[in-house]
Length: 130
Image (cartoon, rainbow, N blue to C red; front, side):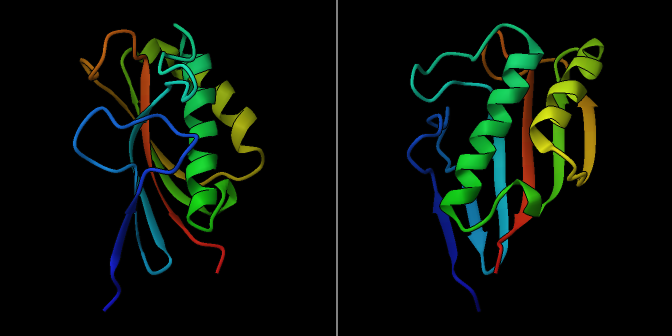
């Protein structure tokens, strides 16, 4: 039986609650809900969904590298949008950061998110490079 490892690597925003960003079991990786906070300032990367989406995916890149993976090994991403009118702008920033890799994805409109100003959060499932 594989042991579960939980991590919040340096260079990523601090969790806003009692949890770690990453759980890894064997080659399976889950990253919990992540908002677009800049890890150096602790503030949102910007007021718009584009800046926040870019920051989330940049944070995912750092988190995945810390556990032996990368964005090309993402299996599924959930996107939670505060306003579905942000969908196209989120898609453009998402495509920019994800490149040609197109994992399965679900986009859901939500009525609220945990902190003021958050336009989008995401979580993902990935596998290691091994």
